Image (cartoon, rainbow over all chains, first blue to last red; front, side):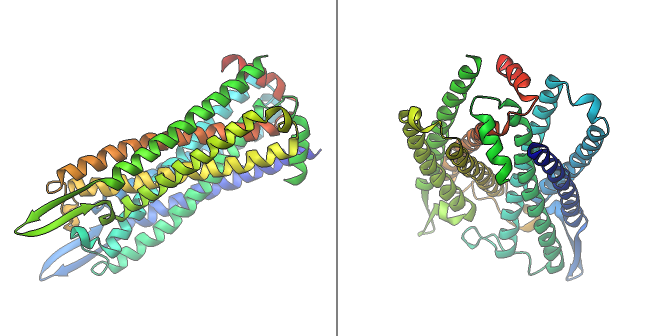
Length: 195
Length: 195
């Protein structure tokens, strides 16, 4: 009974986290990807867009891909819930599915964190400049664009954190299958009680 | 017997990965942290050091900390191996240790990946410049320093990949404790055979 409760709570947490990753990653990609600001300097028009900074292009691509992937995973979760009684009893298939979900979720978490870190780094240089290298800040010129990117980055960080938690949940779903040693049942009982 | 073989192989992989993370992270921090190049422009002396670029400071700090952490973990592994017969049978303590090791290893993997991504981003801008923002490349001036940082970054990427694998191993060590459901023993048999 306690084990069933744990399993159900993990399932709910997984679906909730996948929804969060999908929504936040899509929001981050949309905020950064659609932002632009045009300014006129002495009759010369210049437009700031995310394509001016390679790290922001990477951010939009990574978060867009993560949003699509999370959507596909949600469809898979729904399908698994619909056909649970028929499919979940075949052990080998479950392990293969858990391995592939685990690998993809880990990859998504690391890619989102790396893309977010690179974009944050670029944005800090854009905001403060790097005077030792004569790289000047640009947010004084394109304030509205910088604010937009900042909002997108906040959303990207939140999506990354959700993806990290999700990677831990899918690791739990996979490696739990390799338990069943002599100590495991006592500890599992412990864990379910303190969960 | 098969389960013991799996456990032993996981232990060996863990120690090997910790050694790799420790050595590669220390190498990366040392290569980037000690590199410097002085050039004279019209009787004005300028020195390039890693402190000129915030992302490299972060890289040195993160990889230095990861190397020290890995060394401490290796000591813990050695201590655990020495006192295995006495300590490993108490289930609750094992779960607490596995939880803390898992959390720290995950944090190290994400921090190393994020720091490496930020430093790579900075270095690409340093190498190629970002002409849209009037940020000029600096590797033409400080070629030897740039090569040194490049070697450090290669080592940092390798350390990050080892830390990712290590995070998966410690997830395995933790979540295996929560197995012991009705399906798990069949799958565990499967998994050990194909491992």
